[in-house]
Image (cartoon, rainbow, N blue to C red):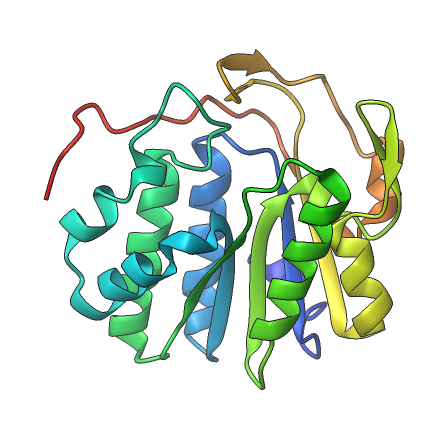
Length: 229
């Protein structure tokens, strides 16, 4: 993925990764991509984690203490969520910390999600939070692919402009949106679910600047034991 994307995002301020939450493979793919980026430049990253946990993420990035990260409540409820609280998400945060230390890139991780149940309000909130974090460094954001879409989408019978569309209207060609598209397999979203077989002809793809296909994904994993500080 890195070789295909490197030139495309060269002059972009914001790069969105639109994913299906709850896989083992997608966070690992993004990890590898960020390692390659860190070899040549600084960046910050936004994660679809409620902003109430920002202080704990900052504490982890400063201390490197895994216990701080692993005891964030968001990562302790594996049976009641969509996969963003998986071990693979924990690992990507740990890897970003390693990248920061190894390459001295002063990377900031920003929690940008809200707990709003209103779709339009949540999309607006995500977009506003991401805009606040944009700086002279590249900013990456890992979002569900619905949120990362640059145009209107219909979801559960409701049409709305997602965060990616709001951001595109603000930033124009300074933003780049990539969809990571599994062709088959399973993922975890309030239980294990099957991928509806997709390909490069998927009409939703027109809402993105670049499509990266994965042949197969498998469900994410979770912490087996809840810890307490």
